[in-house]
Length: 365
Image 1: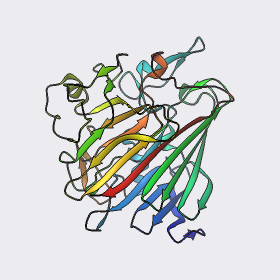
Image 2: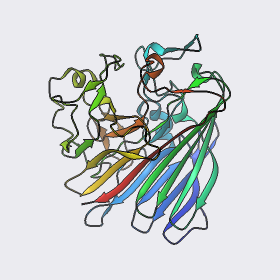
Image 3: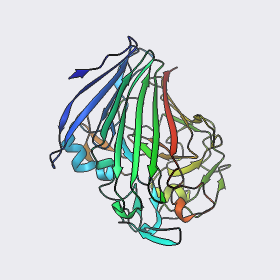
């Protein structure tokens, strides 16, 4: 293990995590502060492999789902995406195609007729290059880079993506995304961590509370593709503006929930478009007291109740994960935006830089 010079409040260290089936070495970076918050990042998929946080009694637990080894991530994570960086396009693109500058681009499909999270063998299964490891008086972090060649999974342009993970001494994880291209393209980057504030192997999150600062959402069809509407959440199970148990509406006969087998929709954030991260959501576990606040510059937030987990994979602690054992809060642009001109644009041109920031702020009450 290599430890980097750091301030007394936050440390950063580096160690080997294994070798992929194709012979690529994978590194793990451990960021830790004096309050017991520890963030572990692996260069395979840029994955958040562990996030330890204390409860109201000071007891520390890992609050993100994952696998115990690199082999688990290689075997299963292309479908589950535990903790991974997602690109080129997070969420779905309808029928695996979109038009840009009058040209039609066709992508491999991996979600029925649609392309999900960039398609197969995308950013979540690449080994990212660490380009900077840093520490200072109040924070420490690592910057990762992946260069996606022109035409990868059908997307135009050579895209250079940089993602910087930073842990602060006041218990915040900052994720900063930057991307540039040499040709007109579309891009939508996010992190796909699955949270359980009671601990990653503790079972259902239905009693945990969710609050999303959004008065509108983008309804979908039965294939999870937006209809193009921006709908009011009022008087529907999509109204999460006040703290609500995550399981409160999971058995409602509301079409959006039936089609997705739970929550898996995009909320239009009320505080979108800010130059610095604005409040987007809060999750709270009444048993442990842990709180997760999400701030972001992104326009949308995909709230997902881990509907696809079915007991077929064993997680970090050796226990099987089942439906509803976690939730995801994916700050990102809207799904299928390239096919909906009225949605916030995801186009990126040469000379431009995509720049988005999401912050996870941990606490207890």
